[in-house]
Image (cartoon, rainbow, N blue to C red; front, top):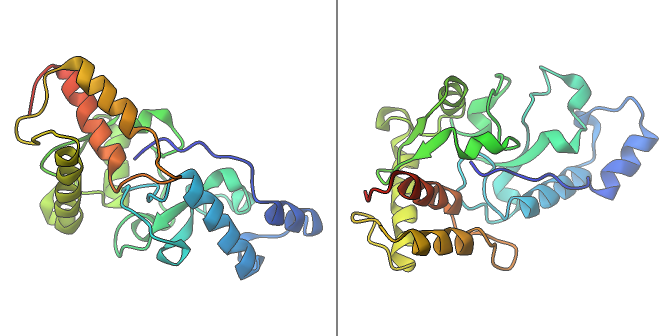
Length: 213
């Protein structure tokens, strides 16, 4: 996960809410739902809010309520509660359904309580992180989500190689690590490469531990 900064809701959603004071999400037109996805995708630099894989367009994702609609019907139209999730089966939004989510991409702690590894696996460093990984099926063990782990490993390694780093050897130069983290944190033309937040997380772990992996 990467912390998402939610912006202003789409004007079409604002206008609809003004005209429908007791409205709910399931009453929205498809055009407004698409506009919500467009805004959410732009905020997320075209990465899934949960797994950080690339989302090519609004047809490849859905509007995901972080606090599920069944748990809090009053927030169904709250744009600050809606992110764009990939449509991967049994993962991310599809796995979340109506379960409580204790650690979310709207919390800055999501970047420190989840530890990603070169192997492609993710580890929870707090109880709520462990629960969140299980709820979203983000790949703590191969038996749970081998496909995501392998994809995350391959694309994260490719991004490291592109930036001149051998994933198996790591990088010991703290200044270079800081520079690379800074560079990767800047979206290019409004988008980020797949799993960029994962690579940043790995680089920060190297920086904090002073060890290569």
